[in-house]
Amino acid sequence: MTVEQIALLVASLGAIGIGLAHSILGERGIVKPILKRMDWAGVRPDADFLNRTVRFAWHITTLAWIGLAVILVGPLIGMEGRPAFAPLTVAATFLVTGVVTLITSKGRHLAWIVFLGISATAAWPYI
Image (cartoon, rainbow, N blue to C red; front, side, top):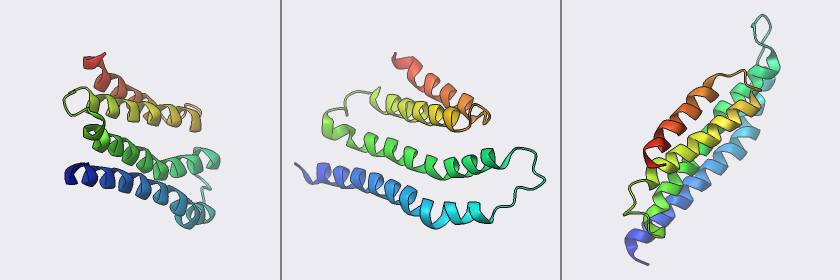
């Protein structure tokens, strides 16, 4: 393994590690305390929907960082000569994000439409 390959592997593992730490530690130390203090009284959507939206907005970062980690690993698994690899990885990342948004918001947060649209348009030239 070359120094460049080791650097990409370390960077990829770092992206996954920071994403997991962000989600796990952030959930305990930031998201839960914020949600406990939030007062949604008088806000039109229900509190449960808003709490799920805040939580998802926090954790979506981890999904993006994992997608970037996969792109970093591309050259290590022979994908450097395949121009579709990065766009299809981005498409897969937005697909997961869109599906999670659809499920967690029960379809109420319309970002799922945008995320799935990004996924489809990123993948379309390669499928």
